Length: 170
Image 1 (cartoon, rainbow, N blue to C red):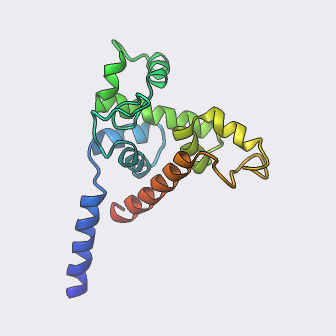
Image 2 (cartoon, rainbow, N blue to C red):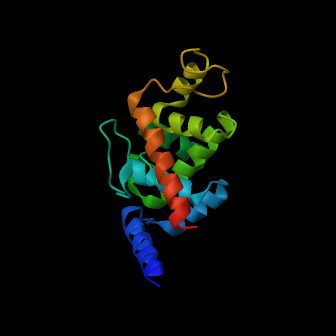
């Protein structure tokens, strides 16, 4: 009996530390792009801590921290009417674009999650360069090291959050 209560308390505490806001929107676009909604939640937690008004020093915006250039590209590809940079602060548009972009990265990097996350943070051009550099990749398909400290830390944080989300929200 006491173990059950303790486990419920731990789960409750973990859900406070690892919330999922905008669950319906996340599920909609994760399903549309065949992504795990727990992965999308982990990215949002890492990128913005679920703050829809977040803006980075590099001008990335909203929940999934979409850069204006990626937002413009996505809005054209997705035919989003009346799009402007302020649209990236709208959760529905931001999550749609973020999931669309993750789908593009999945195609580009053959579904390799670590490469997708590294590209989401550090740019797909950089990841492609690292894959061709024997200091970072032995086989041209996987990375043994990520040279950008911020990107390396980002991938680790997202993967940790992703594992936690999958456990507590199974």
